[in-house]
Image (cartoon, rainbow, N blue to C red):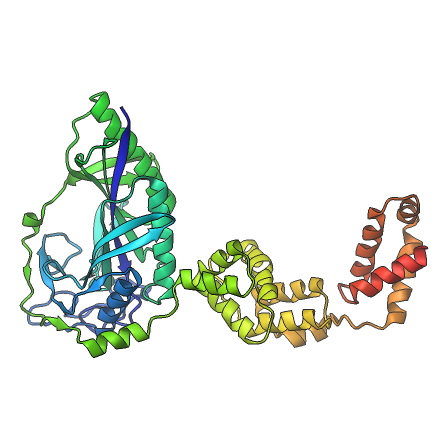
Length: 468
C-alpha cells in the first residue's frame, strides 16, 4: 500500500521590536548576561499590569498582509495556563478566541499552502542546564519577547514542500522588516501523520517541537514518515498522539509527553488587557508602510535585465537586495552590480565565513565606478574589495597607497612587457610554436609585475606586437 504524508506547521517568529510585548524591557536584541533584561512586569511580580506594544501589533498585521490573510479588526488576548519553570506567571499570554489574522495562503511553486491563523503571543524564558552540578538555572531575558505564531493548514505532502515554504517565509518576513529570522528567532513545531493515498482520514499525529535548522526539520520528517509507516504495516509500535523531540546526534526523534488538548490549557480571556480595535485608518497606514515582497523584487530585477536565477538569489536576502538597490541608485549598471554582488561579494563572504553582507554600499559603488571607468582593473578592484571586507578601508586612499591606478605610463608598461619576454624564453618559444595559451601566461606575468595595474587591452596589444 502507498502512503502519503500529511504535515502542518506552527512557526514561531520573534518580532523585530525595540521592547517586549507587555513592558518596556529590551526586545529582540538579546542581552549578554542572564536576567539582565527583566522587570517586575515580565517576571510576573504581583500587582504589575501588562501594557501592549503597539509596534508588535503592527508587525503582526504586516505578516497577515504578506500571507494574504483576513485581518481581524477586533482582537483579544487570552491566558494559556500551564506550569513550567521558565514561565514565571504559570500562564502564557496568547490569542486563542480572536487571533489577529486568519484564512491566508502561501504559494510555493504550483502548490498553495493554507494559513489557518496568525496570533500574537509572548515568549517564555530559557532553562540553562549545568551537567557538572546537575543543576538547572532559569534565564528570564526572553520572557515576554513578542512572537507571532503562524499556523498552517495540514497541506504539506513532503519534506521538500516544508523546506520551500520555510525558506519563502523567512525571506518574506525579513523583507517586510517583521523579523530578522536569525539565531533562533524562527522556530518550528512540525505536526506529522501518514495515511493511505486517496484517503481523506487523518492518521495519528506526532508533533516535533522547537526546531530551527532546515536540515534537521527535513531529516526529522523523513524519520517520522518511516516510523509511522512501519508502525502501521509491521506493527513495530502503537502510534499515539504525542509530542516528540529530535536528537541531532542519534538522528531520530524521541517521545517527550502525550500531546495536550485545548482543554488542558484552560484558555480564558486575560482580564488585564483591553481588546485591540484596529480601525480602517490604522489598517490603511499599516498597509501603506508595507515594502515590496521578495517576489515583487524578483520581478523588478528581471525587468532590469537580470536573469531569473540571479534575480531570485538577490531577492532571497534583505541585505543582498538592499545592497543591490543602493548601488544601482548610485548610477551603476544593474547587470554589473549583480555580477559584483553575486560573484565577488559572496566569494568574500564565503572566504571570511560571514553570515551576511555588511559592507558600506557606497564603497562597493565606488569600486565598480573605478573599474568601469578604467581607472583600476577588475583584478585591482577585487583586491580593494577584499581590503574593504577585511579592514573597511577607504577605497580611493587604498588605491593611491597601493599604486593601483590602471592609467600607468605606457612607456613603463612596454618596458615591463619586454622584461617579461626576455625572462621567459621557453614560454615565448611555446607561443611561437603555436601554443596560444602561452600568451595568457605571459600576460599574467606582466600583470603580476605591474601589481594588477595597467589596461589589460594595452598590455595584450603590446605583447602581441613584441612577439610578432
